[in-house]
Length: 148
Image 1 (tube, helix red, strand yellow):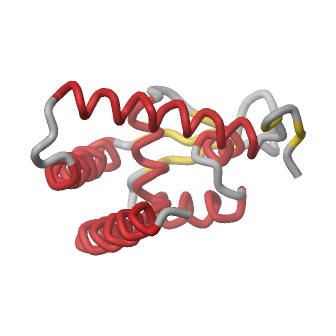
Image 2: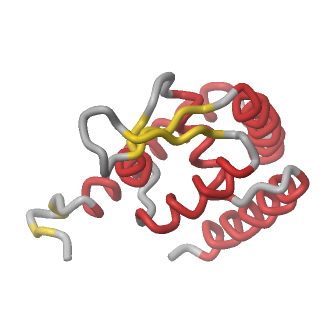
């Protein structure tokens, strides 16, 4: 892995941990809240785990923390008693606004000195890379070979 990418990732993680810590949130909590804010209506716990590419146990622990704080509400699905549906509460929507502010500030830091075109180009590359690795993670192929 490129040393520069690793440095960027470490600094980004530390920044996010520090900022989210002030909101008493962990990074996985922020991922869950952001996802729920972008998808109005209830999502299944399984869908959340799949969308943010985390194991079901991590997502369940995050949802328990968020529910305890009143940021999400979990209900049993009408169609399947074993499924839990998750909704963002008004307090969760407020927390998402703060998370958005934190992310916007981080983007201002990392894109300082970039033109809008450069930023858009970088984001398009990042989108493609993310699609590639997500497909690989979900059992897709890479250069004609299946993932392990």
